[in-house]
Image (tube, rainbow, N blue to C red):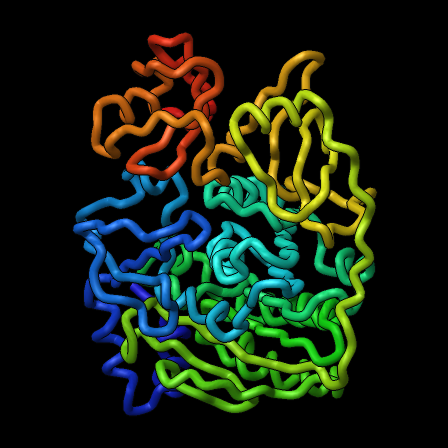
Length: 429
């Protein structure tokens, strides 16, 4: 049962469309996934249906197929993402070689969508203030093989102070009252109240003010929510523009969405196949290069060089960074990360030892192939055994990339008969 105060407001807000909105909530949810360009060519899957009009990699799927259990999900070939939630990144339009920030990034749908559009080029900062949700974000960036991202667990204000004017494009998918999730999540209904809406609006204003500082002059800011409340949507944008006269609305071509004031766009569940979203596109006046000062890299250690030569691994342009016990390969524009709460500074390569190199799971998921590969059919018992943590048969010796239908899923180490399993214990099933 939806809250009465919510229904009364929606009746006023939607007018003649109110009945259509209520009928849409009685219909089964449309579920979607987004293929990951970083994994190469898209596979043909029987459960994938019509395309999502505003996202070239997005498709609706049959919910009975449960694609989250397929090995291709573990391989990062696709990301399960509600269709209207794909709209803000489509409006942001991140491109290769740009500097992009996703300020409220967990669980990672929009960050991985940005990464797919950037195709491994440029610099992507993905931030989440909640520590537990930041870990989920980091894991999803790893699963989808993203190498050019810095994942942080900071407040928006801290990042604004650290990186003023550093980004060509900034996405603020702000925490909200979640009215667009009412059909999907019962908790969104029970947690809702008029005071929750007002509280979210106050918090969103603070996040917007911090995010504005991250945008370079001439850069683009997209603000989005998954709620219908005007206080969190159009009114939040109007108030922001009054506080920041150096920003202006930037209308874009988006025929799939209901356009409103100040270059804002509504994704209503009774007008498209999705749960509902709001987004506004803003441009900062002026023109300037993104001011992000890169830090120096390190020399690659001999154990890595030997390992990479043996397996024929070629890294993209970037630099080496030691972080914790691991060696990472960071984008060339990676800034100094000292005194930042960092979860992932680029692509984790692995751990250099005295006379050997232990490759990271992240490296396996990034690779599209190497000199030692053992491929299995995605539906084979061998793949099921590998995901369970068991040894699998293989004539390979030494480190070997295990793939399912050509998509990498992890490392094995062979003795000529079987592969010892190095699939992470926390991911086994």
